[in-house]
Length: 504
Image (tube, rainbow, N blue to C red; front, side, top):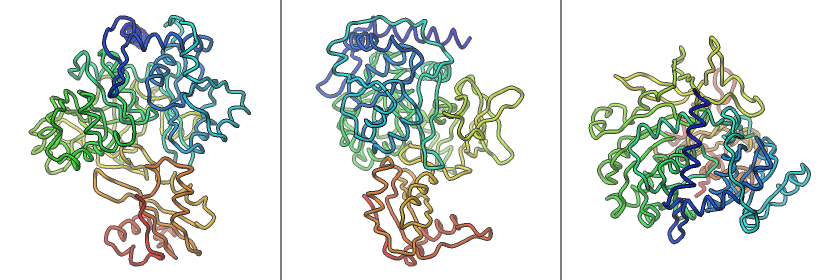
């Protein structure tokens, strides 16, 4: 059944590019039709047809050729490995080494360290502009596409300081997309906003439903579009917004009375807890027709739960302050451990991390493959509520961050003997706080410069505090809970030396 589902899905998917007369890409004055996108895809396929089931890194800005390359890679039976060219090259290089790609498609010159790695490994590099200018056209052969082959490899924060690769097969994410299309009343010809890094798994529920409904994708053009999205939503007539609550919170701060001229049909919140004040804004100021809260992670392609939000939820869940993760999506199974951990199974679950790292996150029970989410859940009436994490993982602007990943990079600094990270800030605007132990003074500007060359911006502490001594718990380990408590009550600041420094 899975093979038939995947085959049918991609037949419909490819047919959109062939027959649709609608726009596929809209970004202010730039507009490209599905016919124009398909023309570019056939050119790129004349190269990619020479490869099968090979990893293809796309290292590019979010422009029209990038989207053409993404869809071509998938339809050619190869594996898309998204790489954000705005990330520090050291971080990209770590992911490149893990991915071991066969070729790279890019719209720019590679940084020196990445270029040296590519030359040393004999990886082929192609400029998208040159391929689209000169290549002949080759039709797609969907017979090359195997449901159980890896289709996408995403990278998430790893607890050891090295990213973790999460391979998703076609058979993993197609059931999720079918669930979304069956549950939500998309219209033909919507405009989907795309505010997030294509290396973020939220790209799955943006890109695929967009094509399947003959709609247009509208990417953030620059940092201003991302930080102040109101203008982008209005000018591009966005009707579908799939994003994290932090984005909605940012819109609310800038435009508390809503966005005149913006008419959202579907608004999906995911990646972080959806607090009731944000839902209130979505329902009563943004006036979205349909508001949904989805829950999941990269490992489950990316969603396993959904709650359809209603005005009465503001009173129904007032005691919790957040919207529930809802009910299981079709095809997913769940159980709860004795510690309250949510464990899920189903076709959406990845077989495991790249190179079999952290195998303990998965288990087989009576021949069934399960993923241990690390989230604590409790039932309430007919839905489920998420009550937080059982480990040091946090969400910053929807991105999953292992605090021990940031700590590992901080400890790599010569002046730092130990480092503890936790989150500060309000519910929808969380940031990382780092407490450093060092016998010598620590230059916080050097900390920022050091980390900015190694980590994405959302993983860099906004506030750094240095202490001469770290408190220990009864086990002789650094007292993480005690440090966070003293930060919350302000006593940590008075003990710290030198004064804490905040990064903007």
